[in-house]
Image (spheres, rainbow, N blue to C red):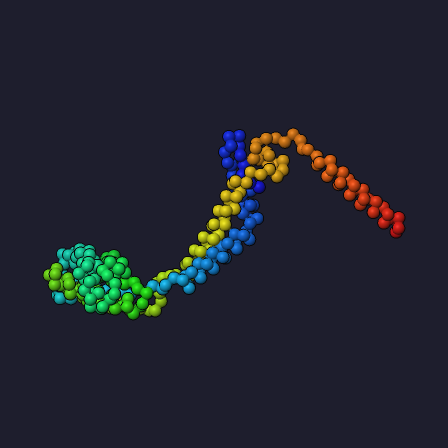
Length: 252
């Protein structure tokens, strides 16, 4: 089986033949999927360094406001965007580095920190990723404290209150071993399928009269017999088999 060419040398794909070709190589495809899944599992389990997260939360609208109006709520909501920029800014993070005695610089720490505002809320989630879960918690907690104090001093605002400090459940957020194993298996299967399909498309060998009609669009008027030597050999073998059968019958 293979690809088919019309009179203009354009490739025509016979989906039925292609499906049969894939079924013929299903063992190869399955083996590729298993091997890739094993590789994905091994890399995730033994080669990738686990990363942990810890999240602290700040509340923008403080309890010092006894009566909260709609304008206060709108103001506190708009302030969250400003606070996100401030908390991830150089002054806050460099102060955290000094307070905790971290050996990383501002840019390295900034890449580990994400500050998000959950929709329809006045909360700020400060999440820190690190290979050490305890250190991730310490950094998240310190950013919450330093950020709150910095906002109060520099922006002349009521300091956001810390709703909760970070915690670690001991489970890494990456790598996801199960996900990587599944994705590895799918990638291996897709690669094997791609190889089979490419081989199918570029296979223009002629295996019989039907291939001539499919691939070249020509009608077969006749076929040539086997070579004379091969034909004589077949005839001699046939005669020998008949003689042996005949002698066997007489002896019986």
